[in-house]
Amino acid sequence: MVSSFKDALNSGRFVITSEIAPPKGTNLEQMHHHIELIRDKVDALNVTDHQSSVMRFPSIGGCLAIKEQGGEPILQMTCRDRNRLALQAELLLAYTRGIRNVLCLTGDAVPVGDHKEAKGVFDLDSSQLLRTVRLLESGKDMGGSDLDGAVEFCAGAIVTPEAQPIEPQLAKFEKKVEAGAEFFQTQAIYDLDSFSRFMEYARQFPVKVLGGIVLLSSARMAKYMTENVPGIFVPQNLIDELSVAPRGEVLAKGIEIAGRMISALKKDSICDGVHIMAIGREEVVPDILAAAGI
Amino acid sequence: MKSITKQKPFEEIMGQLADIGRVYIIGCGTCTTMTGTGGIDQVLEMKDRLQEAGKRVSGWTVIPIACDEMTEVSIKENKRAIEDANCVLAMPCALGVHRISLYIDRPVIPAQDTLFIAVEDAPGYFREVCAQCGQCILGETAGICPITACHKGLVNGPCGGTNNGKCEVDQEQDCAWTLIYERLEKQGRLDLLRKYHPPRNYQVTPRPRMIKI
Image (tube, rainbow over all chains, first blue to last red; front, side):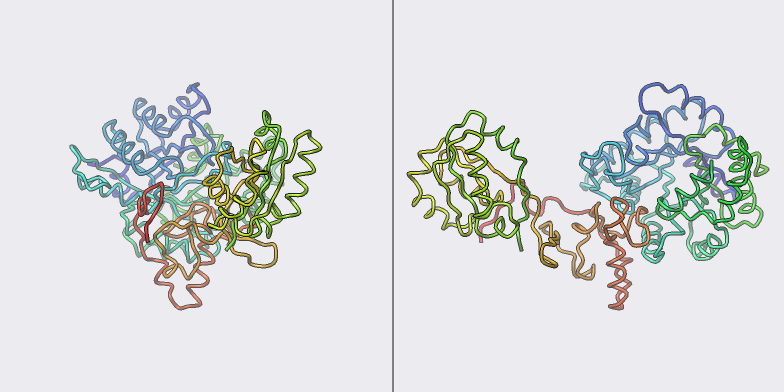
């Protein structure tokens, strides 16, 4: 067994993952609390890696906390902050500490974050990092040397099914499959018809796809995401639903929408599972699952 | 091809000249003339500003191409005035600063920040097109360089930050990989979009880079 998450992916049942955002600082109380709330309700928990290029407690630190609390972590690794030596070294460390799942990302650009003058590394990209995972598994490193003790990971990547134009994204998706990605977590999806068409295409590849569910916490946030976040399109009817929700019940409406989408994806077996991103409201993940009837 | 520069803030230049009384100014007749940062007009303007700020200017010259070997001749011709100064304020790009430093023992203080090597798309619009990385892949990217045109320098296709053909860093900036995709499609070579490029070799010519031809 590589990991309980990999077993879940291969079980054929609908897989649930969610994510934990580490704190900016050393106060881990809230992160521990979120892990405690969610860990038993999901198959695995991602830990973001300086999400949006904002410096935080590291992804691997969050993964170790999940391990200590009895959960199953997915280590998110971006190529923005480390060169190939540091990335490989961190994979070795992760493996020795029982972390068995890794999500390989290129990473957001430095200037979108809070250390705008920093050097973006990008020595590798996501598809090269995936190949690096597989290389380390073979007992070799990128310099061609033998490892004294190899690694074994369930490795995944991301895809943006609603990007425009879609063709370059699909070419990249296929490169990631060839590089050894076993699972994909998608960028937020809201238009299920369009996502179903993407899944018809993705089904031809031997990978598991978890649809990205981002909690809409207000009509304003939904509009903002549609207008500003690459590859996210929130249909107008969802924005309308949030705008007419009575004051104080908007979040509940967002939870209901997320739950409804998850349940539709599951009922029609559109994809292999979902990845729930509550972005700053991790405490409501159990409510989203309850709304989905899970 | 032009070396693109931006004149340093005057306060920064004055900071570097803090303990210096007499200055000799050298401009360049090529790139910094064309970018309006270190040609004759800017040299004269700098002279006035330095004098207003209490510095003495022992002389000035604009060397036709400050980065080539004729610079030595020009410096010899102006030897007396240069030696009369405590330092040289250099208004060519950094290539010129290096060349000038070869022939002058006085401190050479750059007045410019050298930004990049560019081509001029339209009058006044300069664009970096080559990072001189040593492993040209233009043949497989429809003549658009992802090392320079993609903010992250990605060689295996776009990141997830691209939106409607624009870059996540700047909505005015085109996504290099969308441009590459569009041009490959026109050329009927979309298969190249699926070609895997291995990690780059950053030691093609180890730094400091030099070569004997």
